[in-house]
Length: 272
Image 1 (spheres, rainbow, N blue to C red):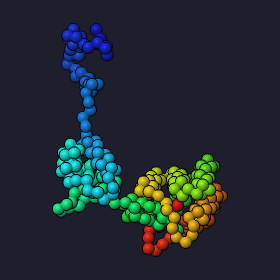
Image 2: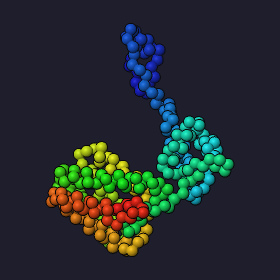
Image 3: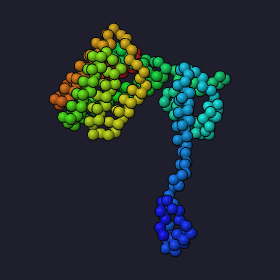
Image 4: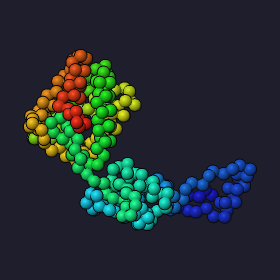
């Protein structure tokens, strides 16, 4: 008799199966459906990091969260697992560690600024990481423009124009944050055209890093933010037009202008 899922095998079944399969290894038993999967160290570390993240979000920036041992006990994990959680939290810019008496874990300070032409991005504490990402992003832009000149299909160009329209809508609505996000979506779409998966993925990850640490876009400088955004919209519209015409010289000139106009020699530039 063959056991069914809703009827466990009895002794007769076991005996018959043993006789029929004598000398042959039987199938490996599958996992018990009612058995909870074993938690991995990385999974426990992620949950501990999330517990500390909730604590960070409940206090002002710069607040002392406790000692490593106090937080490890709170998270109910081993020393090794908590150290892995701490690496995750530091990589995300959520906590800082201070040694000595009165030290321990502190919620990260926020609100440094990185220049965006004649406006600025308000960022969290990972300013240096963002500035490095911007410099690498700018260096990769000409490579992606070259790929787009060769590989962009009519459908790709139509998609780029939709992002340019979103930028125009944000500019009209005087919404600088929406404008910046629409702009980054345009650049991500240009990157997606490239057949070079490594290049496209690297560029997209850099955009994600910049975007994830952006808090707001407050105005500053001599040129009004609205006027600056209108200029940037026009530059990107012209760039997409050049890609559509396969005008290599103009496209490369525009991306060079994109990455150098309005920059400051004293602060890293983040151009939308």
